[in-house]
Image (cartoon, rainbow, N blue to C red; front, side, top):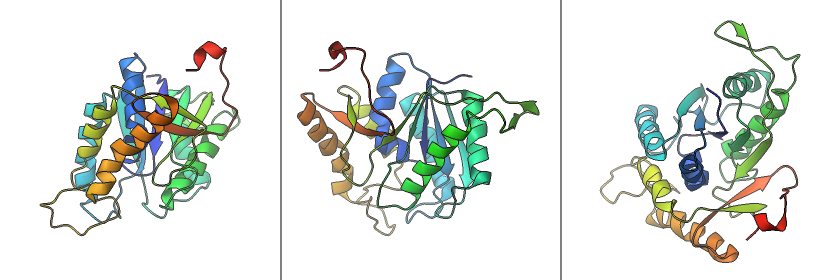
Amino acid sequence: MKLDILAIGAHPDDVELGCGATIAKEIALGKKVGILDLTRGELGTRGSAEIRDNEATKAAKILGVSIRENLQFADGFFENNKEHQLEIIEIIRKYQPDIVLCNAIDDRHIDHPKGSKLVSDACFLSGLRKIETFYKATLQNAWRPKQVYHYIQWKNLEPDFVVDVTGYIDVKLNAVKAYSSQFYDPKSKEPSSPISSKNFLDSIIYRAQDLGRLVGTEYAEGFNSERYVAVKSFDDLF
């Protein structure tokens, strides 16, 4: 299956939090979108890897993605090295996405910028035909995504561009809430964490509203780009 967009996150829930509304919008527009999680989030303060697996499946159904896979890298300890790059290259060549969305270029959690650079490097290397990878014993063709964009996470980084996601914020919120072990629940007996507060859950809405305010729409999600962002004409801007 060829994908239009492959969204990659260091942990299950990274994609939903960072670009869930954009994904929901692109799927509604007819795009084929998949999610790749690098780890199972097994070091998370709340819940467990098994719980996160089930929550990730629920969230994927809410978003309507075509596929979701998990590479089961070591949470907190994966590295940007040949071994990990090759595993991501195999996935990129398997699904041949035109666009890859990945973690923030700078963030509070060390896995986020680490995962961001790992994915970016793998996207470049995936286009080199002399790097051989195999899927079901068949040699894969080289494939390099046309664009790599980084969604914004904990830190309020200045976006290079924003996507109007008006009409899709509720889908994002429902997908995030599928991770009930991780986020605000006044009845939970689990230890508190930086993302388990009501303020953090509310921030999903008010941060999208603020970006929307700045560009004249109701809600928006921001992204950083490794390359200049180009438009065909001024008509593409609003």
